Length: 114
Image (cartoon, rainbow, N blue to C red; front, top):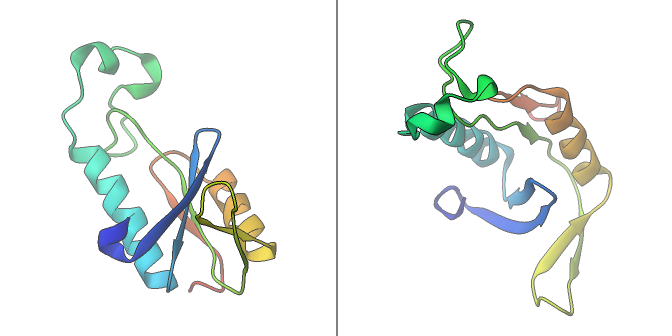
């Protein structure tokens, strides 16, 4: 994420929250992640799992992730335990909802990003 100007805020369950200075960097990062996963060499044992096999409707083979992107103002607070910044507010919530609406291998963006 850093090579796209991103800041890894935190992990939430099996998700990563990453903040970017601008939406275009976030979208480019999302596409780079998806492309990297498509071209990764996956162990044969992993590809035997039903959900990770090559699918006919797309190029995906192996691990697939969902990426949600939204842009806007956020509430930034310093976490006293970690010394890292955390982000809160409607913008964060909307990005999380976008991630939840898409399928693995997709990058979902809001109208504000377009």
